[in-house]
Length: 379
View 1 (cartoon, rainbow, N blue to C red):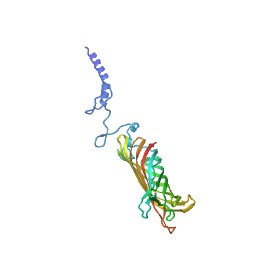
View 2: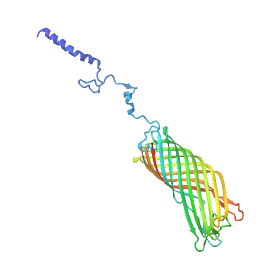
View 3: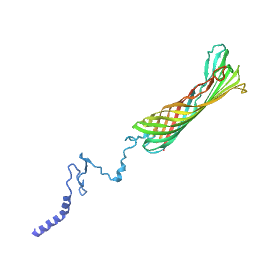
């Protein structure tokens, strides 16, 4: 072949190969272990690997616009993520909440004795009859707002209405000895019927702090003020012998307010099932008002008409245990609760057959105990 033809072919091949060679000069060799570039595609790695620190950790190069795809660490519950079954107890967001309870409580109170069933002899050897309350229906509602960092504030209203009835007749060779009448006037009867009723109202202002202990335990600390209004009426009618439609009516009322502290706890997690406990205690300062009225001869003769009131401090406490189910914004619970007030009322008893002014007061406790069913919702 002529020399000129070979020269033309060499020049043409060099012209075609020179862009690739120029590009290849700027592309560094892939590091060992890196994936090879596909033919005709971009290189597997552009630029040297970026390292952060002396330990060879690869720096996060996620674009800023996609950073919210990773959930931020929880700043309000000690770094724990709140599982769904504990969300009603320790919610991760602010908002309103509400709870409602039906209560079936039996009140118990001291000072409800009203007669002795005795023989006709001089010995006092009979059994003492005392009235008991029946179970009463009540409700308790709580509503409030949950703030950030686990704090919440709310209001609780509790109501209960209950009553009780009983009667007794003297059998052959027996006589009834009234325990409520003034001594020396109506001392014997053949029948007695007793009645009582209770109206219970409390109003609580709450401040709470919720904590997530672990994946299965949550706590709520409580503090607040309670205003309480409790009214009781105890009435007994006696008939026979000394009593002709004799009636003794004892009315007691307490109104007071004071601070309390307490807490709630939830332990569980399997499909939202959990155990529940709530307890608190406090002091109420208020006025105790007591009135005693005794009549005979079907109301025609008044034997006692006495009223008095004074201020006092009443300790109180409560404990409730139960179980339930909760998930996300809904909770359902049921359990047993006991509430106790020490020395809430002080009924009057006259004690002397000669001196009309001799009397004593009998401080009486009030207890409420029974079942509750609760439903709660967080907004």
